[in-house]
Length: 418
Image 1 (tube, rainbow, N blue to C red):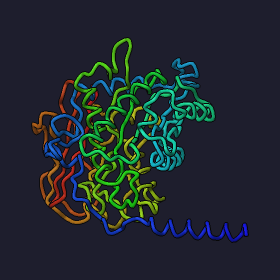
Image 2 (cartoon, rainbow, N blue to C red; image 1 turned 90 degrees about the vertical axis):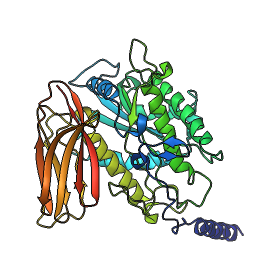
Image 3 (cartoon, rainbow, N blue to C red; image 1 turned 120 degrees about the vertical axis):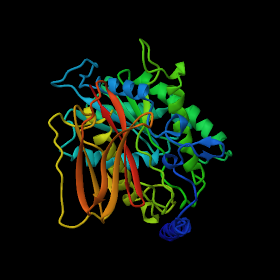
Image 4 (cartoon, rainbow, N blue to C red; image 1 turned 180 degrees about the horizontal axis):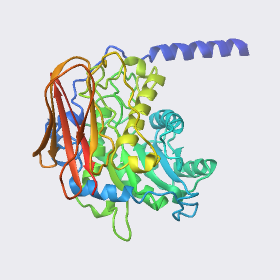
């Protein structure tokens, strides 16, 4: 009888799993990624990462982030700078999707020879731990992180950077209400992070991945897309001077906040950088990432930390050099790479790839949109190309460089550090 009951339970589980198979027909929901919405409007709210629809932080905010990044140094268990034996801890914060993605990133990063040997990556994210739960400083979530830090032979005072990706389970409120609730919870999390990890300098925040294939009420669209606004509003609140999120002075109440990699794309509709989400990227519920989806996020994270101006200085080893791999075959897609080095002084290299010959323009602008230089303007053959940018500026500056090749267009940012 027990065997029969067990057999029936297995059949029921299999039937339930089949019934929950992701909705692979919903390959798009028709929303514009925040990075491409810009100053455009979604339900009366502008897009972009930062104020005025921009994808680039205001110059003052970036300068503060770069200053804090320079203070991220190896520390001993008590938190005192120890460049010889100390450690830098990068900690993840979030729910099930976060730990599934970050654990793959950790395996990639730990195997990467370019990673700073003083950097210890700890996955603090945990399944089922929504923003509503962990916005309480007494939640067991934080005790579990303490244990994980001990397991990694590091301490709270050595935690200096965090990656946060959070959501709420089964939201039902219409936009913007649910996103505003999430934004408030994220504020609390930011303050808890600083209180628990006094040497935490920077916290990067990321969006949800696509949820159009979801077949449960856990967090389907449009909630996954709309939750990106919660991150945007959180960061803007700090930029606009909210004193409850101050990162400077004698008693900072939060780390410096900025966007990490933006993970949402409209299903099979490619973003300008080519990111798509296929049904095979997800588990049967259409919400949690399958191995392919986890790998996709892990690669985005690795690329971010190796090239982001406020991250590369502590993520990469000091003796890291860039190795360019070339092929006899033409590249498969258009691509504008992050300049290297970044930050730079006095010059930097910008690389781009063309799968076919095109008329290419590569322009550089300052933060006010004024053109600083035209590096390329003409017919360029298929292949991998590089150009040097050496501005004559006398002070630290943020630049935005843009490539246009046929219908392809992409922008990135470069930082001159004097």
